[in-house]
Image (tube, rainbow, N blue to C red; front, side, top):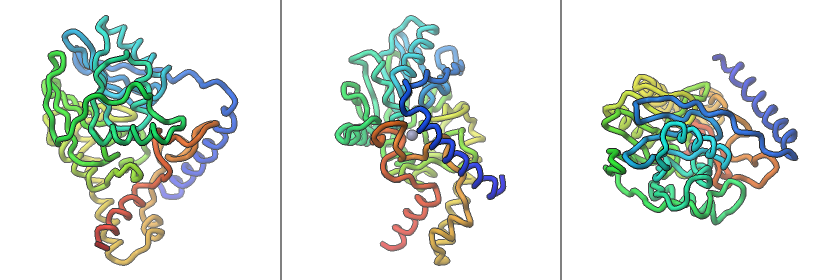
Length: 320
Ligand SMILES: [Zn+2]
């Protein structure tokens, strides 16, 4: 895609986003878009789309494990209704890949008292969002009640073997990658998404995400014996998709580092390496329709592009 075309699409999205906000501010929330259920193995399904990020559904011996919980009560109810079509077993465990509201906040519709597993930094970010309040804050009575602290933690839940990885901070400081070794399936959270016009990763600088850590995560996920990756948003991915994204992003980050070394300014680097706009509008960090800023939503106060985030990291490293 040409740079001019990319810029035009970016402008159109900002304008459309602004119109959408003014048009829907006074109305009841629209029904969430439908979820597409895809069977990956007889006991593992992907719940693509709907309200919020993608979910992975794993049917255990007596109950169901769900990875990521959608954004809203209505969206999560849709997901639970889809699960009920697959099995009469109750949802007993949720594993949440990171602290963004579009993966967390649907927990409000999940059964009370279930096990909710996250990385410890995810829990800290949710607690901070709860303390800050606002529309994006997570449900108070569905905070994580089991946290992981290591790079790799293996566990068996309800007869299902799982490996939970925190390779490094990437999308946020508390990313968790969920691997099902027997089924060769990985849930990537938003470390990998398939709904952007380019292969740039989404990094929440304000949640201590890391462009360098993102590369570590991709290498870690590629090294797993897996053939299906349930991404955070958009379609499923293959190992080849991850390899392409890793190559493209490594090249891009190296170019940014080289330009920093040459003494180029951020504006010069951004002009040379324009980012495609993040999917959806308004941009990360903007106020949602008719409400306060989404403290626990998809972003905080700062919405940095990939180039801006990488620049901050690289210049911080050189000044030390
Ligand atoms: Zn996210």
